[in-house]
Length: 287
Picture (cartoon, rainbow, N blue to C red):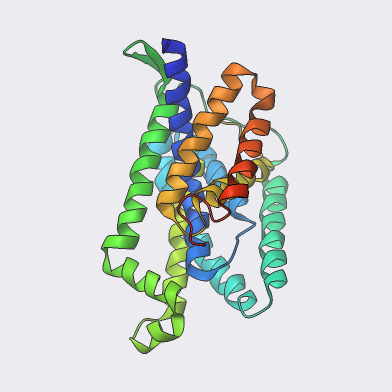
């Protein structure tokens, strides 16, 4: 395998890790409450803008921007849960769809009003430029984003499967009435789930901002990626989102390398639809 091809695959894996990170927030909400958050892509967009604002104010990169984005988005997640989600959960599925879609429009046009429609970006050297690793040229921003995304996604999985808080959240996801009888407050657990999901999404947004343009409409593109990643991995499965994100990142990179960047989305979505034809529940989802 040529060094260029190895570089393409490594770049795809790093990008796929970031895809997995912000998709894990979407799959967590689905696993907890069976709600598809159509504003998820705009949560990522807000994380990108938080990172941009932190850079403008303090000249700092993702080491400060990512924690700030996590805090801001986690707070927003709690506000959204108590201000909107808790009410629309009592209504039909259409109310949930339109409610989160309306939230997406509200967030997007609020950012349009505040920041304008211009494309913004962080300095290319904010993380340290590029370097060679065993003959493979890697952008430091993408390497940092990929590694942090893997660590945070792994930490989220450990939180859900190896801690008391995770056990309580999974109990509410399984049967909220039975969990309440055991002394667990479903409202509290669901609010925490929204805070965690939005927080990791904010971290992903801050990481993406180091190598991607920042504009209010970027959430539309990222939302599609998140939905494809979660569907391919299996709704409700964080490990599934990780595997699917890595696969999509590699497929995108190889498609762009072999047939051109213009056609990479066609390849990804064609393979995605073909896979779901044989396994509609996704890689690690339940039938």
